[in-house]
Image (cartoon, rainbow, N blue to C red; front, side):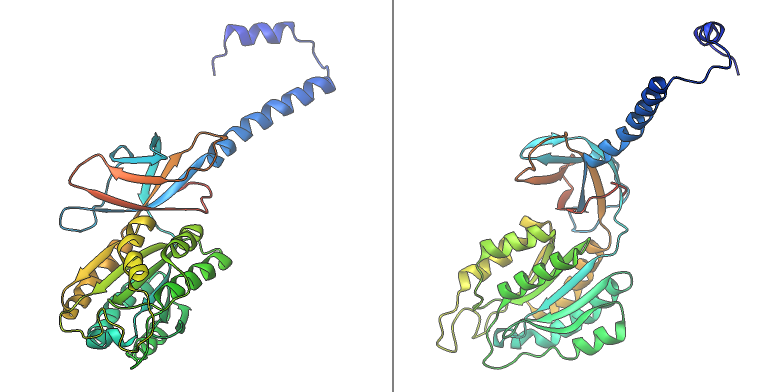
Length: 321
């Protein structure tokens, strides 16, 4: 290997067979630590999002490069460092409406779950939770398809039962947060009706965002459903908070929403949702050091025909896709 003239000059003037002085040793060690610490500091300044990118038909778009994404924190654009398929397993809670309002759709909901759950459980952990009446865990988080199918068989609409959707969302989010789930998501299957939860929309949104949960919503609307908007039991339920949660939580948390006019469309919607959830990106971007955490993080695409929704990876580690 050829050596520089400066390097040869240093060797000629250096004393031979002399041990380095302690001060010089410490200085060299300090330089080495500085070199090693630099990439670690860089990693500490990296943040990530789990992002769904859809075309105009609502289908996932693969193979996108980093320069096609725009990530902003509080409206300030950040440098996108790298992107790749999101490979880490999801922890998915499927929340199913079993209230009286869902009676007209319950068979189609079960058929839809038979399509969604196997597609997710292949490489992700899935739990089933009902919220007709106080939330009830039908199947604990698992990948065992036999247990999940047994749980789907327990999905019925219970007469004279009201919905407790917001309670189910908050309790599920807090469970994810306690377990430090690295990539949590909820799928809400809902009819339209009253909600008797003690939590409102604001507290529900905060609980989901604190745990880094993406909320996906499938809402079944059908004319002639007598329990759709009324209160058949004479109690004082709240339709506004439930409607607000169903309408705004997907966008606020990086999830998707499907509005269905007929319950027979539930299985096809579940197929589409499973495809979206299992074809996400992990987008890694740089945040300048020393900044106060932003209030808002958003992602969009440079191409107008593509749409993106992202959920912050609040447990960003090494920043690898």
